[in-house]
Length: 339
Image (cartoon, rainbow, N blue to C red; front, side, top):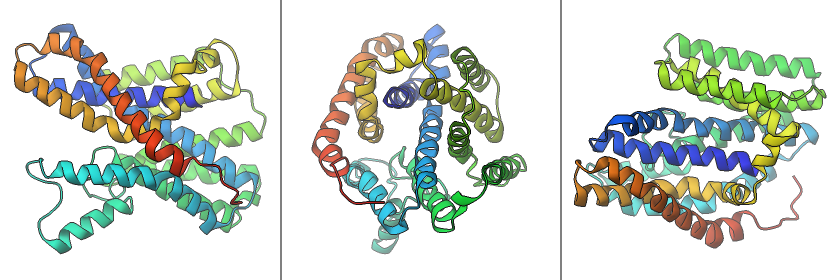
């Protein structure tokens, strides 16, 4: 699990790093092809996060009936302390942004910040104050709806075939609405539903996907995402299939794939993935914008190769600092609260 999280957040880092070079420099040749590919595909790391979240949270509410308010309190403790610190950093950084994201006027600014605190950007047409905030909207409202539907309303006691039917129907509706062109359809939530189906497959004692097939599925989704101008619904479907297969092979099977994902440093990186995910964008933009200012556009290829490791190291340091000072003591502390 931690290894998969590490892979997911590494993809997101590559997306933000490469996007800076694609849009703000004259990077060229094979490096431009590589940067453009990472810029286009790297954001799919979020979809892998969604598959993992869907599997974990759905598994919790199926195993036992949880108390809604207590459960959501635990989710809030997990997300909010680290998020609030990064939100404060975003507010300070917004003073340097032109034009600022925070609207003028006390009332408008307050409503905008409250919308970010409520994790509304992403599901609603609101620009998040920092780029990765939108994905937390999917996470938070998934926690809410799945707990209400399957714990409070006792959907967990339905026969498995009914539960699977509900999940597949929701996925079909999201894909159909997106394909029909309905703006704002949260089609990337299909990955959360993929994680839920993975839990159902595990409970039904179905055999996990073979690692070779899982890697093939991920590879095909990657190539299609990079090469073809996929519509949002097609991209969401391909990524869900690929990452659900990968998660099945990694967590429910054994062999070389699982062994690779238990590498100590990758697990360490995955363990602090939430803090890194929230912080790395600030570090990437600050370092690269300064680099572009001093070197100009002409040295983009050299800068890309020379800066990627130091930038990644700096992002790890910032993420680790946030993890050690905020996330670990406030969000990951042991609890005796029963859910």
